[in-house]
Amino acid sequence: MVNPANDGAYAAAEAVALRSRGKLIAYLAARFGDVAAAEDALSEAFASALSVWPKQGCPDNPEGWLLTAARRKLIDQIRRNRESSSEDEPEQLADA
Image (cartoon, rainbow, N blue to C red; front, top):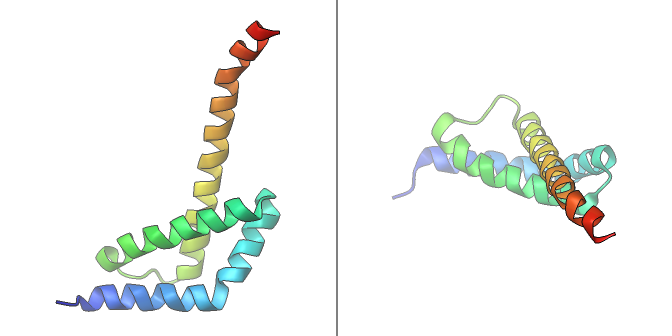
């Protein structure tokens, strides 16, 4: 059985993808300096939207929701990269 709320969420996500995907990637890539990471983060944001929107409803500004979700994913990735590189530093110093 098809859930109408899911159809609305999918339709909203598809509309934003068709209308704004390029603009969102360009903004994220310019801000974070990595096109591939921007594409990955936006893809993850769309996946999150398709999980959340059917349950909570589509936001008033789906483009803004996706941008915020993707930006947060990129920031989390940067933090994880910093943490892993700082954990490697003592080993690198010991090898020198």
